[in-house]
Amino acid sequence: MPRTMEGGCHCGRVRFRVTADLDGVTECNCSMCAKKGILHLIMAPEHFELLQGKDDLATYTFNTGVAKHTFCKVCGIHPFYVPRSDPDKIDVNARCLDGFEPASIKPKQFDGRHWEQAMQQDVPWR
Ligand SMILES: [Zn+2]
Image (cartoon, rainbow, N blue to C red; front, side, top):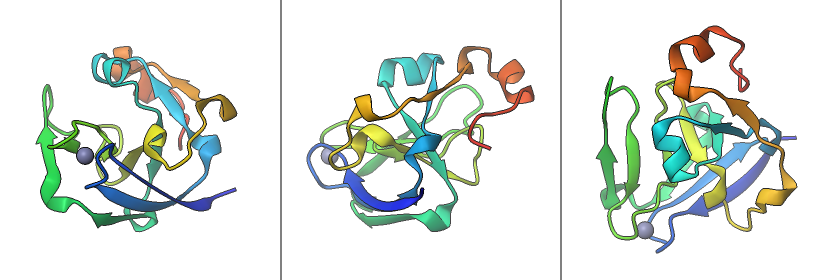
């Protein structure tokens, strides 16, 4: 069931509110996600609202440059970003939701290390 939740970076400068379903959380094994430890919660932009911190965000891009890896300039945490798989959507790091309990969810697996092949399969969040 989708519900409204708030979250943010570690220092609190970046804050957001989302309406999303934690059953849709996905884990990816690509070079970036593995190091970041992100748990993906991908949603349409209308379900995401940046409450504060726009000016505290920096953006890192690599490879195709499609994904916009935004992170807080002060504390370095990546609370959300624009994913390569869905550049018209917002990908929130479920770990940055207030009170998030990783043990309470069973993330679906995305083989981002083999991105092209994985995208031809049924992408779990669609
Ligand atoms: Zn921060």
